[in-house]
Amino acid sequence: MSMRSTFDTLLLRQQPSTRKPCPFHSVQHGKRRRRVLAAETGQLGAADLPPEEPEQPTYSVQVFPRTKEKDPYRLLGVEHAATFEEVQDARNYLYEEFKAHGRSREAIEMAFDAILKQKMKVRHKYGFKPPKSGRRSDVEGDPTKKNLWQMFRDLLEPSVAGPTIVNDGSIFLALGIWSAWQSASSDPTLPLGAAICFCTYRLFDKRRKRNPEGPYWGNSPVWGALGATVLGLVVGGLVAWLTVRYAPFPAGWRPEAVGLFVLNAVLGAIAICFK
Image (cartoon, rainbow, N blue to C red; front, side, top):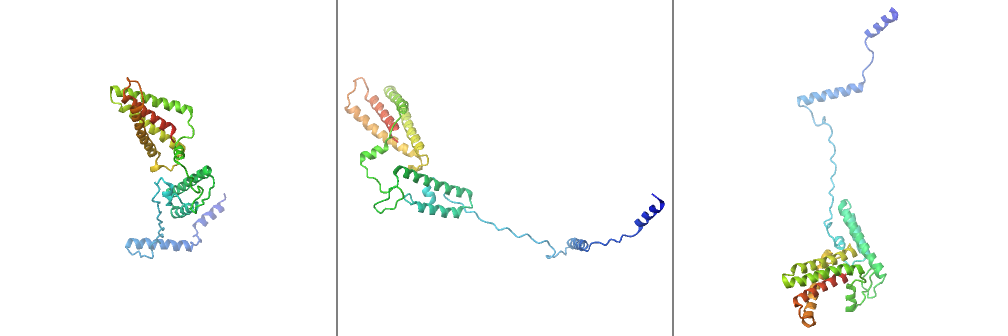
């Protein structure tokens, strides 16, 4: 580099800059400086404060009060004899009212689906039978008149498998022999209680598997199973009394042992043959 170019460079560095400051930045800097000074001296006004953010509106979510109701008709607020249109209107109204709450919306939809499945089962079983008496109905139509024998037949299983008869029958047979043997030596409460519990369990298991979604008496299949077992105890006690009173049996057999064996046999028949 020559001496002249070096001298020219030094000369340019010593000259004052001709660049003008941006007026916008100068104004902003001045505003910030005045705001800081006003805040330090306590003279900051409401106009100088930053604008407040608007409050977000709060919405209250309505919760359906009958989410724990097991009966789908009660959950939707309709009768069991309600038509499909009434059930659908109740579902649509409740869905619009509580659609913001996820659990409420799910409970309403599940109740509506349960009613639809139940009505489809009735349609597949009976077909479409419009009522002739002017009664409001969906698919069941007029009820079929049945005598006592037909009503009793409806309570029985249409068919019982052979393995079920062998397996369950052998259990009740063993419990009956145990009860008869215990009556001669000690208290037969334990084997008789085991027979009652097993009978209740078998009826409960069959009803739960046949119709998992109900409807059930008392909203649970266990109550119907207990009722059938109590009825079996009453009928079994009557049959046992008649057997001991009028049936001939060897003289060496104790009447208590015979009565307990018959009572277990009746419980076994109810557990195997009844629905």
